[in-house]
Amino acid sequence: MTDGTTNPGGAGPQAPGLRRNLGLVGLAATGICSMMGAGITVIPFMLQRNVPGIGPWVLPSYLFAAVPALLAALAYAVLSSAMPRAGGSYVYASRGLHPYLGFVASFSQWFGLSIAIGVVSYVLIPFIRDVVGALGLEGLAATLDVGWVRVTLALAFLWGSVLVNLRGLELYERILVPLMYLMFVLGGVVVVAGFLFDHGDFAASLLAREEVAVPEPGPTPFRLGTFLAASAVLFSSFIGFDSIAQAGGEARDPGRTLPLAIGIAVLTVGSFYFLFTAAVYHAVPWSFIAERAQGQDLTAPGLLGYLLAPGWTVLIVAGAAVALANDLPAMLLAVSRLMFAWAEDGVVPRWVARVHPERHVPHRAIVLSGLMASASILGSHFAGDFFLGVDILVTSMLVNFLVMCLTVLALPGRNPRLASGIRVLPGRSIRDLSAASGAVLLTLFLVVHVWKDLNAELSAWYFHSTPLWLGVMALASAIYFRELAKLRRGGTDVEAIFAELPPE
Image (cartoon, rainbow, N blue to C red):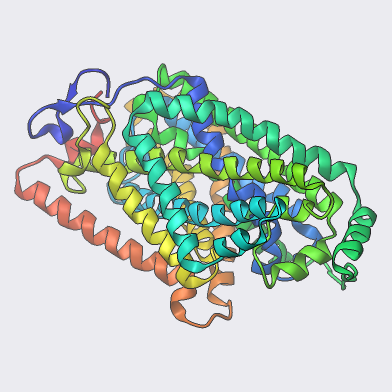
């Protein structure tokens, strides 16, 4: 959409459209801020609980997880250069592979990211707890661990981010970009501090503070199944660059800026992730992390707090809180644009695509996405372990990225006119090799992740992510076929909708 008006799906009265106001920096910030959050400050350490036995193999798992992530990012870059529209992944697959697969895959993405927004909101509170604890306010820190307090504050942060999105892209960009730079500066403190200390320093500090020794590491032989399971979870750390594609209807010079922003986000965050994680494990023994993770939620600042003066601990916890808070508006932008694109095509009720006449944002889609994320906050609290949300996110995004790779392979045959607009990897042989390699690795990760989930010993079936995800996909299918039948009964040429890009 541009400054003018739109006629969603070719029917109904004209309404205000989205505006192409996001430049390269704003797009890159959307991807970077969607990626950096719980993935960098929590998951590499809580992985010791979620994947028992990973022990010292976290960093190699990170490197391996980066390979399919880079191939998926390349698929997104290819498709975004040819089809720069709001709700990118839905548009790509529905025009380049199959409308049903496009909707189901993007619904999976919407559901997974909405869950992630709730998870991020929920895990933000322990960072605030660590700040007040480092300041000596132990009573207040204990209060922040009270269930209803944690949930209330998480909802407040979430709906504050919803408000930022509702106010429009100008405010969104003014807030997001400076905080992105601040996030890197404060995160850099963790990297420097982690490499300044070693395991001996940590052992001495732990003994002085708690009068206990660092646990002796047990035998941790390399096990391929454990390694792949950990890599599948760590893959979630790279999720977020797809948010750039969802903003395709609001990007300036989208054929150039969308792929470029995706590349900048993936390479920047991937490099920073590895340095950050390596620094913490350089300072803190993995055996200590593995033991403590069984009974409490760990964060990078909390671990380094054993080595740093309270002032420095407060600073790095603040940096982690900024990283988590930045996740929220960026991911809300992404999921709301998916809903907007569905409604434009008529595969969900068209009223969802309504754009605010002054702010030029899909306000109804934003609010609905906020409601879904609120349910995720309550679910994380009910489950007692936010990793249920992480597991759902990983399943959802593995499916979505797999569909994107298949779309790259199918697009030239299904819609050669749109394929002719590809500006990234225009040579088909190398493009197909990259997409096929990504599809194979993503399928492997998906199989391993589902196997791990189904074989986990949990207290109830609904704590397994796979049946929950399948239930959501059944709901998505019911919505799709119901709305498609309504379109056909109303005389809409459904095939024509999916043969063309949504109007500008």
